[in-house]
Length: 318
Image 1 (tube, rainbow, N blue to C red):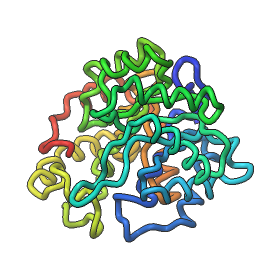
Image 2: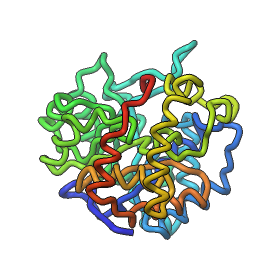
Image 3: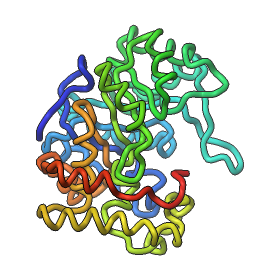
């Protein structure tokens, strides 16, 4: 696979990474298959997919344990391992809450390292900024993890330029993980240009629109039972049917290029910047290989123009 670096100063990584959330959480919870996921984790490294992304909230906690199992022994040093802190299990109807207190960060990094079975992570990320805690305080605690050798670099997720700048005043920001795909382009306006200018890696999560842009679903009713996506506005049946027009154009371009819709969607994301490394998730070897192959797909300026002209989706992100 082609490679880039994790921002201007980071380690070499494949231009496509692997998001691990769906292996244990949120998507098709009844379809969990740990042996297949371990196969995907190890197979990813063989394909050059070296950035492996997890979080303590996924599960919660058991996603890190699964990733640790998959990357045990000789596999660990072949991976650029990333995890996150800052979201905690919620109570009542609140699925997750925020906790950016420095004392929480200090305890959470130790717990994550135990679950992952490693002495350090390559990238430790603030999953969400806690509105109750100044970002400078939370970020300072993440910086302590770097100083202690528990993390080699630290990053942010779901942030604005103003929040990035406040964090950078305390400690360098290695990466920003915001959503970016053919149907979620908000970061193109300010955040992505800022990260490119300052040599910060941009790690798009949900680059396949939570699976929608793969074209594998013709109706919201086809989602697995208890799948979190069924609660999202864009996956409600009326919006879903309207949004299929986006997939139809992506599929049309793919057929012209001999590629799948997923590969076209990932190639568009890759074309957005030098340090852009999408992290599509999967728990099957077939789709892992399909996603990895997108690194070799080159879109022409005409292809990109067609994709840039796609309509906005119907429905909000959440």
